[in-house]
Image (cartoon, rainbow, N blue to C red; front, top):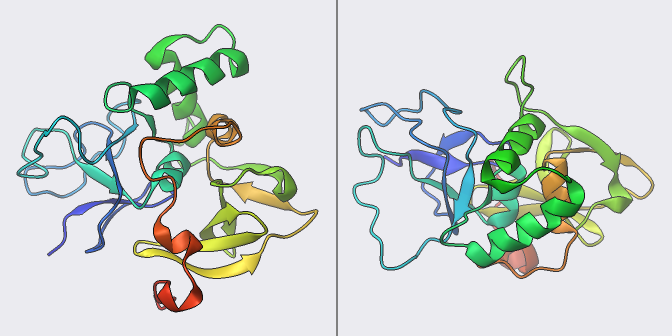
Amino acid sequence: MPLQNRVTPLGEVIATPERGLVYANRGCIHDPNGRIRNRCPTRRWIACRLDFRDRRRRPLMAPGKFTELFFLDEATALAAGHRPCGECRYRDYEHLTAMWAELHPGQQGADAIDEQLDAERRDPRTKQRRFHEAPTDDLPDGTFVLHENEPHLVLGPVLLRWSPAGYTARVSRPAGARATVITPPSLVELLATDRTPLVPFLHPSATAPPDRRPSTAT
């Protein structure tokens, strides 16, 4: 039985056999039986490299230890509200902090970044996931939006439907429309910068020909 340690663009933690390309951590969110109990024990939500200095993560989801989470790719991790790790992705983190200094003057250090992102990804009163509205034409590649109530990736002139196995159905990006944006606003700004992350930005299915995309069946 697969572990409940894959995360969707909406930040939901699910059990699925498909593997992810990006590793992540948001503290210990599982109980001794491996069931998710507390999805937000900390504001520090980070996205990491799968391999770093030959570190081993076995067994996964050990009792009392942090919960090892996995994302399809970096775009999915950013949509869920996870920022680059300051250790295994130091270059990416430095790029983030440089952008942050211009976007949020006066906010310095990881704690300030994490507090801002926490406020952007969930309502402080209800603790429910928070979205925002923006013109579809203005969104950079890698942003996630809700289209027909499903997470879709913005990539050039199209929207790609997300699935745990990869990107499936494609539709044209609506011109001149407004979108319900999943990716937190500050991380949309990060996507608009010139960067080459240390982890896979997009799953290969994002650019695969139709006969090599995952099935659209749910």
